[in-house]
Amino acid sequence: MSERISEAELVVMEALWSANEPLTAAEVTERIDASREWSDRTVKTMLGRLLAKGVLAHEEDGRRYLYRPAVARERYVAGESRRLVDRLFGGRAAPLVAHLAEGDGLTPDDIAELEALLKELRP
Amino acid sequence: MSERISEAELVVMEALWSANEPLTAAEVTERIDASREWSDRTVKTMLGRLLAKGVLAHEEDGRRYLYRPAVARERYVAGESRRLVDRLFGGRAAPLVAHLAEGDGLTPDDIAELEALLKELRP
DNA sequence: CTCCATCGATTACAGGTGTAGTCGTATATG
DNA sequence: CATATACGACTACACCTGTAATCGATGGAG
Image 1 (spheres, each protein chain N blue to C red):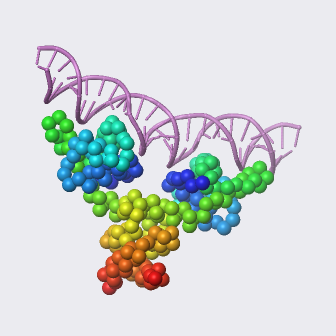
Image 2: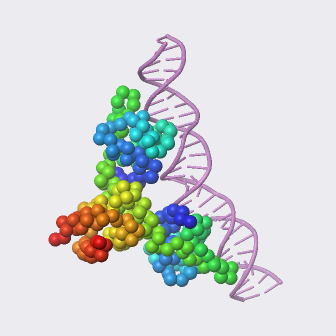
Image 3: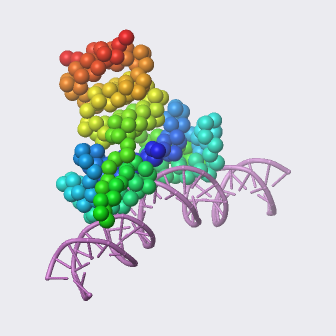
């Protein structure tokens, strides 16, 4: 089910997650070109690998494919977050936040948002 | 300065970070064997690569080396945390905490700790 | 009907990673 | 001193990743 997604592959996934409909390879490439300068070949390689990993699905549309995420972004992001917290903080989130805070990682907005969030979580 | 540390390499770094003194390759291997089952060759390969990446330093002790971290764990952990937040949350920490909370990632202790932390950060 | 553009599939290839094995040398053992 | 051993350096090799190029089929242009 959930093979790891590499960084370059993630760029492609983001393009598909942010579209709310299945895209052709060409459309994916267009949506990426803005930032990165990848050839369409490169994008197709990524699409193929993501298909093989099972994190993309494709429907046939004539002789081409329409690609669509097979894994929700929420799910992926939650998994990666957990991995990091487990690997580096023994599974505890508080030290992570402490680290982010230390390096000016938290804006006043973040702080307010977190306080609101915690208020909700408190029993 | 800060090349990326792979997952297997991280295991070796953790052994050295948790020791408060320089260790020989054999000592590093011992400290790892508890959990993983790596041959001493494998550990030596990691040590060599970490040296090449500049995240370890070594002093000679007779004809062997004593290895010692050249990068503080704090620094590494802060960097990795930032990378994740940038990649997946557009640089904002609050959504990360929200995700962790959602998946039972926060214990009541965590919540209390975070509230205390935020209280300090608030201007 | 012919030829070109396009599509997915397959192949390429260098650098990183996981997991060792081999080599030459120095040292401890007998 | 001779030899087994332990050390670091170098080598191995399959798989993943980033970044494409090539191939065979097909559909559209003329």
